[in-house]
Length: 214
Image (cartoon, rainbow, N blue to C red):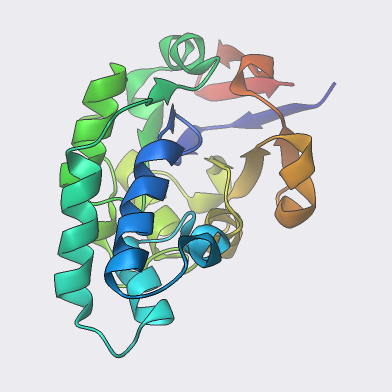
């Protein structure tokens, strides 16, 4: 069993707090078809990144703002199949409200819709793709998340499921716990720790410290 102590936790949203793959895949498939591309070619190119950054990388010839709006409008109106990841509610209930927040590549509009659809508590302050000039894997998002909690990045644990997010958390100076099926672990080797489910993570609050075991 691994035991670590931190002062704050920074949660990614999609794939960590909520499982929204269906909405994401359907929106990107529609976008691919709209632009004459095979949808299956996009699967590993968009996960964990801001959609506008993915559009710019995949099709620099297009108007990224226009294409991003098309994708976001589809995602905001499609929450079919969305579920809350196992262990999320128990973990959030165990954490002091001011010692955790969310750092997501989604826009604020989309994040609020997805969290509300799953009934996940929404922190008073959290970080979205709208709040940074450069999205994950740039460290800006998680650096800002630590700032929201009033902590040094080194005192925070990032919980991620995507290589871009792991890279962002590490570059910001945070410890990183990857949560994903074991088949995905090779792509997440840069994380400090790995688990298959948040249901495996236990929390104890000792003064200002969050002690986690898994």
